[in-house]
Image 1 (tube, rainbow, N blue to C red):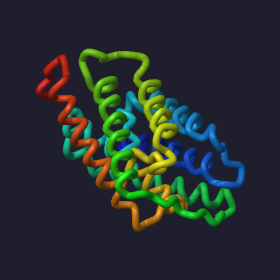
Image 2: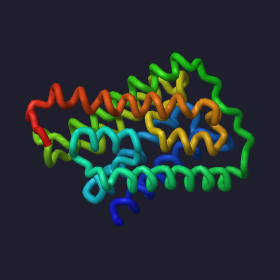
Image 3: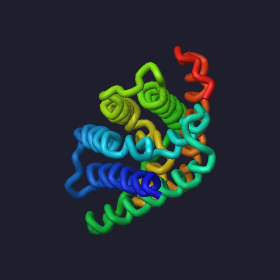
Amino acid sequence: MNKYLVEFVGTFFLVATIGNVVMTPNDAGALAPLAIGAVLMAMVFAGGHVSGAHYNPAVTVAVYLRGKCGAGDVPGYLVAQCAGAAAAAFTVLFLKGNPAAGPMQLDLSRALVAEFLYTFALCSVVLNVATCRGTSGNSFYGLAIGFMVLAGAYSVGAVSGGAFNPAVAIGATLMGLFSAANIWVYLVANFAAAAAAAAFFRVVDPDRDPS
């Protein structure tokens, strides 16, 4: 139960930070990705020893396919992450005074590619810094994961919104930042990228760990 609670709390603060720094009033403008990357880094360091600090259904799927998350844990992780995202969305709307946010207009093909590429990169980083024997016990895993999201947000945030995370997409949709009609873009691209990252890891993993 502790690991599910950590996943809820970590995802809550990730999505709450995203909403608070992106939505008006008092948004952070061009500095928003810095806050998002920083809170993810902090929450990964805080919860990594308890749950693995996924805070992202795509990461959970990638870690499961890599063989480092039990099948019995996957539903609990996904529920905790999505519940944390939803709770964060409603909290942000309360704190911001229920602003009327216009959903981002997407070029669907470009958004699909952007979300796939950077979710693949994020999941690959997680697998290599947090599940690999060659980097076991390192002290930089949270920094690597947070900076990957920071880089992705600056790189393609204007193209897709820079979710790289189905729970973030759910939270952003509830806040009115994404259109509900476009939620499939994030689900398809993020989960496909998770599967691709797990497959890629198994090919390049220098440890050739079969587990």
